[in-house]
Length: 193
Image (cartoon, rainbow, N blue to C red; front, side, top):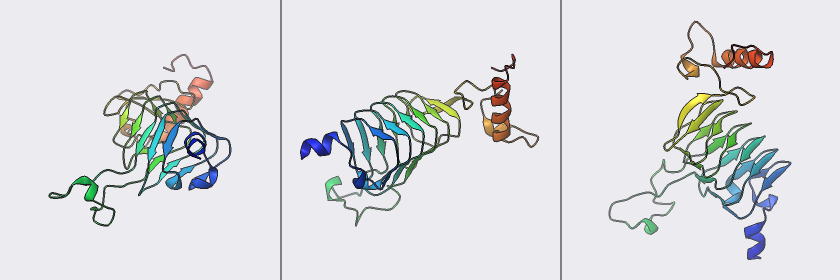
């Protein structure tokens, strides 16, 4: 039985599991708080700790080996040893949901911490430690993770003057800019990138 629980994912143990989900063993997960949608692949040696909050991984997401997600943290109460702190006496705010939106690509050995939302189409580089939200279509690197640049839906680098999709002025939204850049790329515009 130990081999079966360590080396195979039972769909009935998850909060939700969609179609065409592949989780490569070995892994360690609190499965009842994990919601995985269609067409998701998770590489081996993944650890997802979700005892008191949810982890949601939306459709068409690829995750390399060594993913670590912590949706909570140990509380510190002066005068108590950490093992004496239970859910009943743990202060609020230590456990927060983690959401990975659609079409995300996560490199190897990435860590996502409590409360993080990874935006649609984002790419997280290998070894990144994500402590804050990742915007849609951002490529993030490092520890702590920071935006390096933005990518179009085809994963090519976007041409933003200051690499900040939200800084466009004159009423142009980030979605319009992404659409314009993507269309320029698809139609062979030589000024793209």
